[in-house]
Image (cartoon, rainbow, N blue to C red; front, side, top):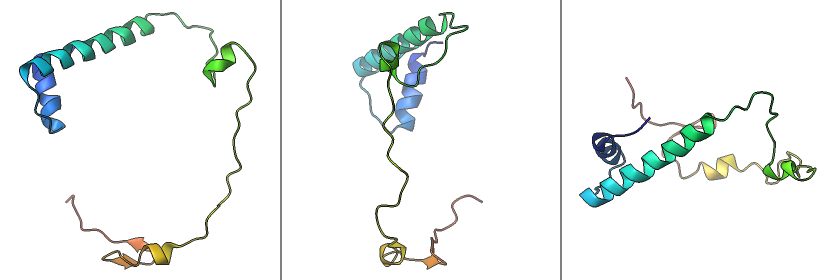
Length: 99
């Protein structure tokens, strides 16, 4: 997969970026280079290879340090919603944007 200058112009427009012609050309080269790297990685046969949970696991045993999933702050919903323009039953009310 490779992008065209028109693709870069469309992406820049969607991102609200104004790219000069030389910046657009440089961006095209960089993104297409990235796609080339991804394509080369996808060409590698990984059949039978177990995915690693951590990159260091390739050279040593590693135990992931996970902290317990405990609430560390008190519930302050009412206090946090005082500045909201509209709240109902603990939920923020927002205007409908999709019909």
